[in-house]
Length: 527
Ligand SMILES: Cc1cc2nc3c(=O)[nH]c(=O)nc-3n(C[C@H](O)[C@H](O)[C@H](O)COP(=O)(O)OP(=O)(O)OC[C@H]3O[C@@H](n4cnc5c(N)ncnc54)[C@H](O)[C@@H]3O)c2cc1C
Image (cartoon, rainbow, N blue to C red; front, side, top):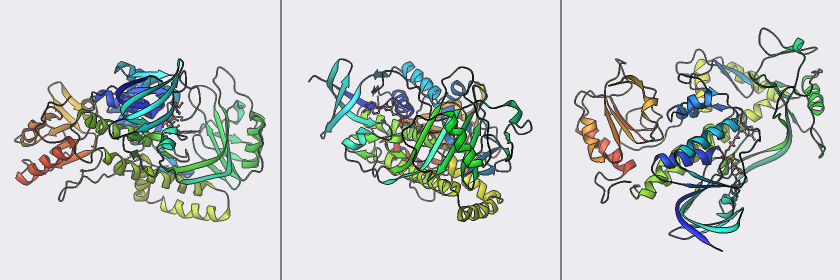
């Protein structure tokens, strides 16, 4: 069997997370090779949108407008749901729940187009079938349209979804829970106009009452969702617990209508969808909640669903997976370029596995809160009381958005922003006031110096081949910091509140630059 390579990085899987990683590596100057077993983009309907910090992160890569199709920055929504309980976000000081209602097919299309612009090669119809590794490289066995071949690479990333072969072949454990107690049914449908409630846009079901749109709606018998998207037929979804044997008969809209009747205790006159498809008709039995016991095995790493699967409640999957890819991209590129400081690549797992663990926790908590039963109803009453307190709403919103992620960046008494995602600053530039999001599309480390003496920028000058600096000012009279060192994933590695950082702070800046971007002087220039 022929062997080609070595490639710098092979990514197995051209789903959203593999494509995002490919874009990030390319921006960092590494040209990955993506292999994807499917011959074309899938028509499968999965995510209906993105929720949380990832929406702002995509804006920081200039991808938000492409995805939303509208000009202007992302804005957080006025409400959301946690465990089928409404979250009123209007009173929050800092509402982190940004949403982007774009189907996964479109997200993959935009990411694939971006990858193509950046010169990424995607081999479709090429399936990873085996792999081995030694100290120097990974050898992937691949079957493509012309038959099997071997591909050598310095690193291989499994972005091959929840059933990841990469994960299995590297022996990475995937502990967690698999249950078969639920059946979820989802379909595009048609509904008589008379039952659409003009005031709420929801449903006015005869014999039941009003069901608001885009809300998980729990009854004592199951869960119901009505999602009237602006384009196409409305989506209706039910979830039932322990519904008996489903069998292998094909799923139909009539079966969904029967299920809705059981959940609501009233007949909802659903019909088949009208107009052009593709139309969704999906029945899923059971659910998996699993987290890889490690995200790296020597030269093989996992990203996205390959590393974690959980209930889709609240739509956290791509908020987690795309930010995995953005966390990993620059670190892996630094490794390939040869300037990665010790431990940088391992920080991918130490930072992202706890973030995934938290999503596992809150999706399981929400799953418990939507089950039928009197105890659950009591628990919901208690939660409803707790959610009357704005601070609890903020806490839950931050958790669902991933805005509460706080990486340990070390340092003595660091500025409160250190380890957190950088706030959306407005900055003065020669071309006018510019939001931070317009300065980060290149995915480079960035030092923002708003101090009086530009002292931070001077300290960072010795890293100029890897770290961009911007000496600027800020129209905000009380900016959250006077100087910030941002990693390419948008997290703050160092910050100061001083008008002129003193020698201790400048020392901490040099330490942060070295910790994340290597020594000031490289023995050979950074690629
Ligand atoms: C019903 C449902 C609704 C969801 N709703 C939302 C939502 O609203 N919001 C949200 O954020 N998330 C949602 N999710 C989760 C989201 O769809 C996933 O998190 C996302 O698809 C994961 O992306 P990925 O790139 O990691 O994996 P995948 O999308 O699974 O992509 C993996 C790719 O790898 C390829 N592949 C597999 N094996 C191989 C191999 N051996 N060789 C080469 N290629 C291979 C596959 O063909 C596939 O293209 C939902 C999921 C489901 C199931």
